[in-house]
Length: 208
Image (cartoon, rainbow, N blue to C red; front, side, top):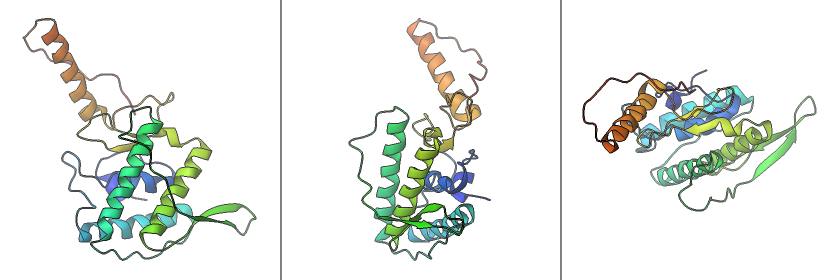
């Protein structure tokens, strides 16, 4: 199963349908991984069609066909920003402003085995928002939500699922964002100590 936006970053994916939230976050343009997938209608349509097909396979629930218009792009980007704020709040990073209300309905329906399931409802972008908030709720109930994080590299911000034992990961990739930050911090410490010569530093602590 492949989530196309997240695959651009080479990140570990969240389990099941929860990966839809991560996938939305990873539509943002970052570093060398490609453009903002919510920048133009053609890219957004390609992304949402593929993402909902993948989500349906992961969740076992049907997904509608969403046909996007140019007017939907702003709503999609606002939805992405809302989830960025919620993820940052959950990882104890200061979110940019107050947290947005979800303001979307969901349905509760028993499946064939008698288990009550949270089912997205609505039409168009409202349905997508319902699916995303439903997955966020289920992830919080399952204890998986705190492991969805945004890379601490401010020019990256790739969303990754932290699989470290103590949930201490901060970089989506220690060999890129981690090393860059460690080298920057090392140079700043040397500058403050009055040193100017350059020496090579190895990778910092390995995070997942």
